[in-house]
Image (cartoon, rainbow, N blue to C red; front, side, top):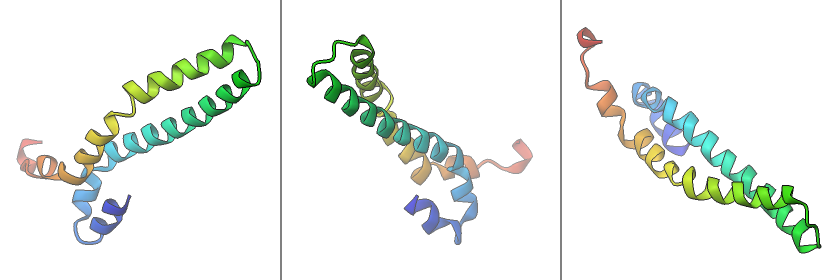
Length: 95
C-alpha cells in the first residue's frame, strides 16, 4: 500500500499496472489473518476440552492456508513493486 501511494502521483500507470496483484495480495493477507483468528479460537476450544471435529478442521485448513497460500504474498508484492515495466513496455500498437 505504501508503494502504491508513493508512486501513484508521479507514475499512476505503474500503480495501475500493479492493481490486480495488489488486490490478490490484499485478499491473501486478509484471508491469512482471518484463518489465523479462526485457528486461535479453535485452539482455545480444543484446549478447553472440546472434541468437536469442526475445530480440528479449522486448524487443518488454517495450516493449509499458511503453507500453500500465504507464501504467494511475496511474489505478489514483487509484481506490484517491480513488475510495471513488463506491463508498460509493450507498445500500444501490439495490444
